[in-house]
Image (cartoon, one colour):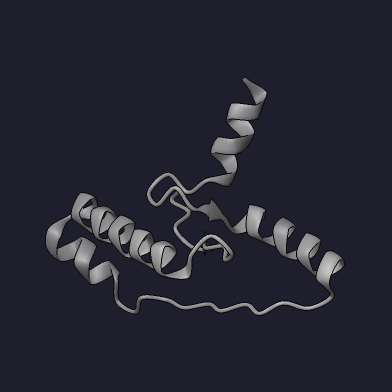
Length: 88
């Protein structure tokens, strides 16, 4: 269905987190509604070395576990997005 395709396009297939285009839309909506917000961005430097050493499936699993732990720690009042990870 079209809704399924739209949802698939806005969800990162590795982490099941909403991705950059969805994040930008949501940030815009939140700014319009609240007028301010806190945005925290972080990266995993040299994460590619994990993929190179152990293979992408292992790197993907590690990334899933990290994101799951962060989501659990943040709780339901916070949103977590994956802003990177677009594969060509």
